[in-house]
Image 1 (cartoon, helix red, strand yellow):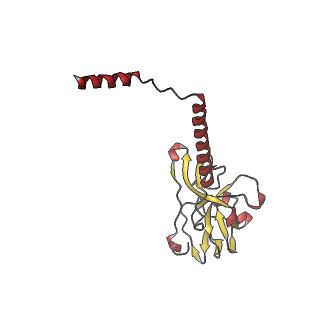
Image 2: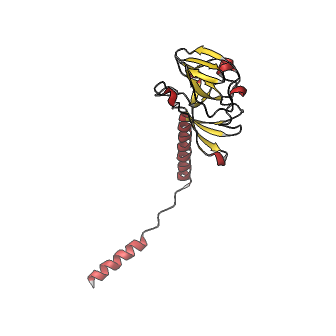
Image 3: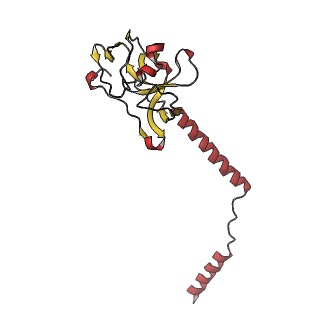
Length: 202
């Protein structure tokens, strides 16, 4: 009986404990502030390491089309230089407006680049470029300096690129395109071409 009496007293004590009060207005404000600060920190980090850009011209057709949206890695070249075939976003050269350009890296520092007979030649080796809209109808002959790149649009004859405004300094490269998120039917990783004919020169 005593054992039962103890249990009854415990039950009564548990039932008599007043319910905990709900968080007050100040607690709610604090939680909201913490959530907003966390969101701002995440937003700042995301924008430090990546960027979102819209394709605003036909210069990269048929690879990229006007109106598509891309995610760009700003940290892609922090530890290594750009590679031939990379599709990059860059600051407009020579102060040509404020809208970033999207081009493909073709020539690397120190290389002799020639554009002739409808093809691009790197140190005397012709590139195989299945991604272009058509052969270039212009000529170019240049030796790239240190930290200089030659960038071209895939729509070779309808692109404002290195064949018009010259070489691109490395410090004008914003980042490497990594993902296309609009339109939904084109969702996916951005293809960056590899050149087996120049293996070892990247």
